[in-house]
Each structure stands twice: as structure tokens, then as C-alpha cells.
Image (cartoon, rainbow, N blue to C red; front, side):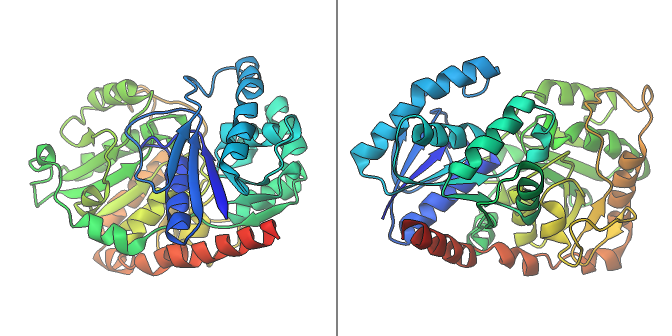
Length: 403
């Protein structure tokens, strides 16, 4: 079977792009003939296996009018490449990629089998009538809409009327993560991690609105006020970097909080840390949580929609009311953070209650040895997302769809 993975880009730093690289590579290893088509050709790229093609759009986002004309321009090219490569099935990942694939079918007669994947909580689009209506109209026209969490599938079913759905979690090569964690840190970071007395927290993710790192930084001021040996490392790049660095300076945290940019191999950094903290305002199925769990890191996460609760606390129902912080079986869930950009110091704007709870959870992890021992077994649930289990589900879907 010939498969085309259609993705926004393969640039290091995006969760859905990384998932696409992993999925395509594992399908290639399983014997499928896999090619990648990216809308934008950016570097550095995630490691992938298969042939590579690009439309090389310079800006796949922008306003709605620009996006519409790009769809009209590039969707026929998707169809043309499918015909040239004699593709059987397209798997698209990411909103721009999904709509390019769907347009190529609906308006340009692309007759291949089409599986689109939803990686983000679609509720964030409910206030956008154009995007909402596009999802309602186009998604049912795919052969299958694969959701990366059960909560995303429920939202698409109930709020968008999209019923051609199936949940398949993102896959993770747990053993490979462990091996990668044993590599040396890049030399320039050795001194930064040399203090054996420090307690190290870490966050991975793009420096953008979704990831909410300003709340984490503000909360960390409260942690450092109590424990000067607390350190926070943020791995990622994005539009908010300068503003986040200014916030760190304003809070006098230059010696405690460090933004290290995007890293090709995050696992040696994770291996040098004690606790992973997710501060996202919304998610799909955050791979960074699973990466942290695969190394048995302690985990604290906001209970944002969607993903963290499904990953960390399988004992909970999706809609169950909680008192925060919730000390779950494998991790701590903290109160969801408000959807606002707050780049001011705590003297000007005091910590909000969810920020206080996030800080107190970090302090509790530092102080409670029994709790640290309890939460140092995350690898158990990380194997729920191991590649062999997830690849079997994809193989069954591809066989069923092609039939």
C-alpha cells in the first residue's frame, strides 16, 4: 500500500509534525510505501523515513482570505502528486493539511482514500463560525477522522456532528526514549546542570499562547521564594520568547529559570530533571507528557482539555468534577489556567488561584519524599502509548479503509 503523509511541516518544535514523522516512519518500517508531503519546507526537521516532497508555502497560516486562496492554489497539487505517486491513502495531520486534503477531494476530484487526524481540542474554534462550519461540512467527507484522544472524539461527535471518528492515541517508542536519554547533553549546557543540590523542573513546548508558560514562570516566583535551589528549564522556541525572557527578568528569576530553545534530542535534558510541568491552556494529546513519563519523571499538569487527564489519570471519567490539586494515581492535576496572556510581575498582578495551586503542587513535590516515590513509576502508563500497540490499530484501520 502506498501512503502519503500530508503535514504542515516536519520542523522540530511542533507536536503534530513530530507525530506525523513518527507515524510515517513506523509505517515505513512495517512495510508500507510511505512518502511525506509538507506544505512548508522548514529546518531543522524531525527524523523521518520515506520519500520527501514539499509545496513550500511560505506562510500556511495568515487570515482566512489568504488561507482560502492557498487552498485553491495548492489542493490541486496534492491531487497531482497523489496521481504521480499512485497513492492509495492520504493521512493528513494538522488543520491546514487536513483542509488541503479535503479540498483536493471535494473540489478537485482526488479519489484516494482519505484519513484526516485531529490533534487539537476543536472547542477552541467554536467562537469562529467560519472554522466551525468548515469542520462540520468537510470532516464528514473524509473516510475516517482519527482523533488523538477520546475527549476530542466526544467533542467532534457532540458539538460538530462529525461521526466518522475513531480514537487512536499518538505512538511513542519508549525504549528509544530511554536510549536517547543516555546521550550526553550538548556541551554548552553541562555547567547549567552541574549543581547537584538543585531541584530541577522542566517544561517542553512552543513558546506560544497555547502553552501558557507565563503562568508557570509567575508561579515559579512563589516556589523560589521558599526554595532558592529550585530551577526551571523551558525547552522550546516561539513568538513569545522575548516577552517570557523579559518576565523572567522582571520577576528576578534569571538565576532560576532558563529558556533553552528547541532541542533535537530533549531526552538528556529530561533525564537531568526531577519533575515535568505542563502549563498548557488547551491540548490534543500532549506528547511531552508521555515523553516525561517514559523516563519515570514526576509530573504535574494542568487539567486542561484535552489529553492530560486521559494520559495521567485513567481512573477518572472525562467529565468528573475535581477538587484541585488532584493527587492522582500517577501524577498531579492542577486547576486549568485562564485563557489570557498575563506578562506582568506578581507585584503588579498577584498570583491567581490556579497559579498559586500550581506553585503549591511544585513545592509539595519538593517537600514530600513519599509523594515523589509514588509518582516515579510513570513508565507503567507510558506503555499505553507504545508504538507496537498503536501501530497495530493503524494497520487495522488502513486495511479496513482500503477494503
